[in-house]
Image (cartoon, rainbow, N blue to C red):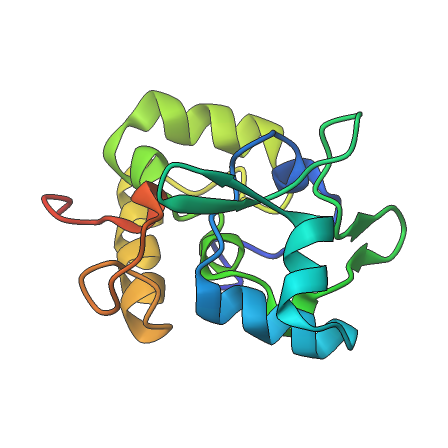
Length: 148
């Protein structure tokens, strides 16, 4: 996947309130990684909205787990939504969304075509078992049904 995307750990994708859905299993993994019990972890890092749980953000809109010049504090156990970036449903379905993501994210190859991005993205999601098709997830970004 390096020819399509190579993460620079810049944190651009770590911005935005309510963007990172975390399942109960993912929350448990992060809690264990941080040495916290689940309840303390949820009280500090998680916000519930309806049936979904989201990683909270700081006042500047950054994920609480992102540290400048270090990257993600929970990188080895980060949620599937994070592991899927930049291969989100919107970026795989809509060329203008892909173009915006490519402009925004320095890790996306500037010379890759939309068709190449989609082909590699779908393959990556399948190989990593990140799509909703392979493993149910409340994260809409991981729904790849209808994308060819």
